[in-house]
Length: 186
Image: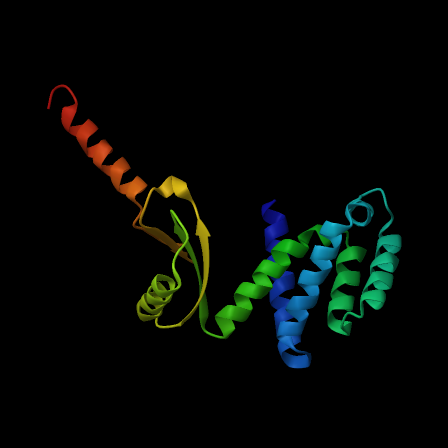
């Protein structure tokens, strides 16, 4: 699976380089997302395109027909044909994620994933976003999700950095300290 992520990273970076020179980078991203969503809604088509038993030239022709029918740009059409011709259409979700992250990075926007125990009211979300802008020094694209398991507080992930201010984590740490303090022989 690591190989797939590495290949998706190479393709995603190359696609962004080409899109920035020759196309509308946002449009390329939308088209890739639409194609992935199409495959999710048409599982029989996805099974054929991802099936190793189907000859690569047939996959490439099928993808070319779908791209033409969908009115996809030449850049996205060529990418899909290339992936189909190498039997690598399964890379599309990871490729899109890399493309999206690199596009945000180029625009000096960081993605923040914020998890709260309940829905975050608009004013608190705005205040949190302003705080994240101050911490990172960049514009922030914030995605929120709800996980009642954290009990309360906020967990924020920016890249590989996690700021865990959840009550569940604080309680776990208190428990660990209490257990350490109760060990025999101390």
